[in-house]
Image 1 (tube, rainbow, N blue to C red):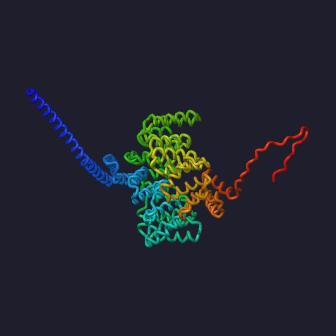
Image 2: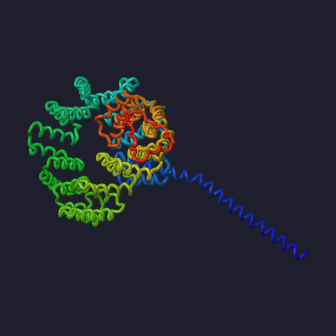
Image 3: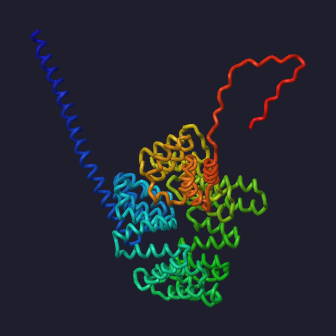
Length: 607
C-alpha cells in the first residue's frame, strides 16, 4: 500500500500539470484573440485610410488606373466604411461612370439618416438621368429632412430636371425666402420660366437670364441656354448673336464651336469646307475633342472629310481609346463590316474575344441575306460566347441597337441585366424601352429582376407592386396590395407609397379608406403630373366629381400606359354609375300546375 502511494501522487501531479498547461495555452490563445480583435480592425482601417489617400493622390494626378487599384484595396480592407464608398463615388463621377449611382445608393444604405449622402445620391442620379433613383431618394427623406434648405434645393433640382414648373415655382418661392440673394436660385428659376407658354412671362425670364451673361461664373452657362432657347423659338437673329458670343469666349469648348458651326451652316448658309479647318485645328490636341468632331461630321453625313482628317492625325492619337471607338463608328456608318469586325477584334470597343466579334458579324451577314431565323440563332450564340464579359455584352448591345434589331437588343440587355445587377444602364434601357412601347408587363419583369437582385431596396418593391396593381386589377386583397400596404406603413409620409396604397384600397372597394390615405398629400405632391391618373381614379370611385374632373383634365395630354389610361376611363364611368342593385332573394315556391292544353301566362315586360 505504501509503495503504491508515491506512484499515485506522481500521477495526480502530472494530471494537474497537464491541466495547468492546457489552461495557460487556452488563456494565451484567448488573450491573443482579444488582442487580435482589437488590433486587426485598427490595421484594416489604417490600411484603408492609406489606400484612400493613395487613391486621392492618383485622382489628382489623373492616373485613373492606379486610382482604381487603390480604391479596390480600400473597399476590400473595410467594406462597411462609408468613407471608402464616398471616395469611390467621387472617382466614378470624375470618370463619368454611371456606376456612381449604385455606389451612392450603397452609401445611403450604410448611412440612411445622413442627409448629405442622400442629397449626393439625388445629384448624381440626376446627372446620369436616373430619375427613378432620384425620386426614390427624395421620397426616402424624413419630414424633418425634407424641410431643410439643402433638401429643398435637391427637390428643386429634380423638378428642374423633370421640367415640372408648378413644383419648381413653389420650391423657388420657399427657397427665395431663405436665400434672398442666392444667384444660383435666381438663374435656375429664370431658365425654367423661359419655357412657360405665356409670352410676356417668358420674355421677362429671358431678360433675367441675359443679365447673367455679364457675370463671369455664369456667362458660358447663360449663353448656352439663350442659344438653345433662341433655336427653340426659331429666332434666327438671336441664335446668330448668342452662338457668335459663345464661340468667341475664351472658355468655349468644342461643343460650343460646333453649335456655332450648326448656326453658320443652317441659318447663315456657309459651307462646311470654310468652317472645318478651324474646327480641326481646335480639336486635334485632345482625343475627346477628336471623337466629338468626328461624330458631328457623321451626323452631318460628311464621312469622307472625317476619314481624311483621321488619316492625317498622328498614330498615337488614332490609337487612343476615344479615337479608336469613333473609328469603329465610322466603319459602322459606312456599313463596312469587314473593317468594323477588324477594329472590334483589335479592341476598339474594349477587349472582346475574337470569336464573339466573328459571331456578331456572321449574324450581320445572315441579315444581309435575309436569313432572319438563322440570324437570330447566330446572335444567341454570340451572347453565349460573350458569357459574363461586360465589354463583350456592351459591344453586342451597341451593334444590335445600331442595326435596329429589337429582338436581339432586348436579349442582349437582358443578358447584361442578369449577369451584372449593378449595370443599371441595361435595366433602365429595358425599362424605358418597354415604357416607350407601353409594355407594362415588360416593365414589371424588369422590376421583378431588380427586386430579386436587391430585395432591400424599397424602390424596386414599389415599382413591381404598382405595375402589378395596374396589370392585374382585382377586388381581392392579394400579395400586390399587401406589399403596397407594407411599404406605406414603413413610410406613411412618402407620397408614392400613399398613392400606391390608395390605389390598392380603391381597387378593393375601400374608397373611403383610400381617401384617408391620400388626404395628407401636399399641393406639391398633387401637382406631379404622373400622379394625376391615380388621384382621378381614387376620387372617381368616391364620386367626387370636382376633384375627379380636375385630375382627369391634368392627365388628358400625358403619355400614359394603357393601364393608366384605363384608370381614367374607370374614374369617368364611376362618376355616372348607378349604385349596385341588390336583387331580393327569390321565394322557394313550387310552380303552379298548368292544365293540359292551356297556354302559359307571359309576364309583362320589365320597365
